[in-house]
Image 1 (spheres, rainbow, N blue to C red):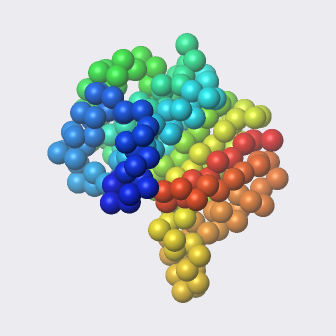
Image 2 (spheres, rainbow, N blue to C red):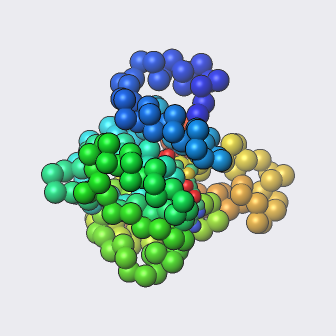
Length: 217
Ligand SMILES: C[S@@+](CC[C@H](N)C(=O)[O-])C[C@H]1O[C@@H](n2cnc3c(N)ncnc32)[C@H](O)[C@@H]1O
């Protein structure tokens, strides 16, 4: 989600590497052709994903929540030669934009696109792993199932990143937490699950809308 109204974010964006021409055009196309363009990662989040991927140097990446493919392209920047990225998206109307921009970014051959509900795709065996890096940025209803699955598919020492774990500050809003089915309660349960999970070590980074970084032990 874009945060240009935040001066810290704006200053940081100006003093970070540019997203580049293809991603800039994809950003514009996303705003012109989709109904919820605010779901797009902003430039600094994209550069963050790219640089993390370059640090990890993954051979296999899994992404849940492709949207228009912006973060797919960013993550692919760190892939080792011969590496592949699996990306899962429920909305198959986005196929045209994926085809166009994955081609322009030169990654058509290394992206495996999976269309359908992430839970169904997970059950189908289409995505097997093991993965070096997994990025979860899909729906928030099934986060614990996604995280359990992701941990089971990570290599030992592999990395899992999860977006929106502060949920606009609602995870520490006691009133919102009283409703068991609210987004706040779900995300709070997720954060509790992660910190108690013996299979990972983690840090919840209080940037943007909160980012969980997990390493499989
Ligand atoms: C926040 S957007 C992803 C943004 C993208 N990662 C980026 O950085 O530009 C979330 C995406 O998850 C997809 N999504 C929602 N529920 C899903 C599900 N159950 N399975 C797979 N994808 C889902 C939505 O259609 C949407 O495209």
